[in-house]
Length: 416
Ligand SMILES: Nc1nc2c(c(=O)[nH]1)N[C@H]1C(S)=C(S)[C@@H](COP(=O)(O)O)O[C@H]1N2
Ligand SMILES: [Mo]
Image (cartoon, rainbow, N blue to C red):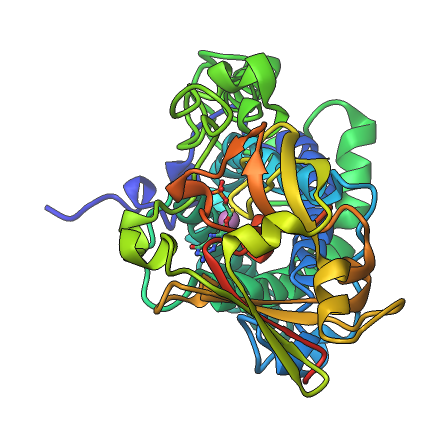
């Protein structure tokens, strides 16, 4: 006995949900249009915030980007919470859009199985672009979610995958929006779906099953799912009391301890192999530049003018801290030690850490010149803890957390 063609997913009558139709797809599409545009813009900003073109690409995780770096600009140091906002939005909105994306894919799934695969070269091109669209969306959401959950399980580095994937995805996304906009506007305006025989979208079920939920019910469910994700994620970026609500975020829930150093830690000293004997009395900071070099121990640093800056740490993974009271020496004062008075250049910062991409970072001239930029020795009135970068770490306003190098051993001003 053969299988009736009606029961195969390639047959339109296999798909029986009465809520599928252009209106549901269009409403979900409008939400995604707004949300994904925000994700794209904040994502591009995040890449710019690394200042990838500095110092021959020390900060650049995608050195082969070529023309895709056309929009890069020098990331400002104010407002000091800038990256906290842009990256908090990127991650929180990305997480909250997951139910909308899944519902949208569900709403169009009959189209995946349409036969013949291509009716014309134009139809073939359209279906190919949809493959890039759906594949690109899934790829970007999966790599992003894995990164914020600290699960670096995919091959290679997160940055090039997410960065190049975004450009492929956005290309297909723009084409899709351009092609579907008229249909979307019509479906949003008309309020009801066409009858199956008047439907030119292929979304309305020809033999609908009796409804178990209304379209409004589906949208309500999706919206509730998004709100739940929003409410259990956003706290990691908002901070304060709200951190407790961030149940889904690895840096949410509770702060990892109490006291001035009891705030989030990205990588612990032990995790990157920082040994106690290297950060103790034998530790020296080397400051170089302009053909000069000085070496300072901690006591010498403490004899330089001390300043405080209230600044957060905001990680690419979306979590951030409230403002911490950092105390230490201004970067521009350290530049002056090797002769850069007045208008110091940028700096390359190196850590005691021997391996890993985050052991080195470059800061721009205006990051060095900002009076809030410090080589911090203290936080909240206490010595830095080992995990927060003892004996000295960088703190710069508005920059991604990764540029705030911990366990600093060397500063090289301007020689690149
Ligand atoms: N040497 C070194 N510095 C580093 C890192 C690192 O792994 N090694 N992590 C960076 C990242 S990604 C962030 S978000 C901040 C986190 O600082 P915290 O651990 O004090 O919160 O430190 C940055 N400085
Ligand atoms: Mo980070």
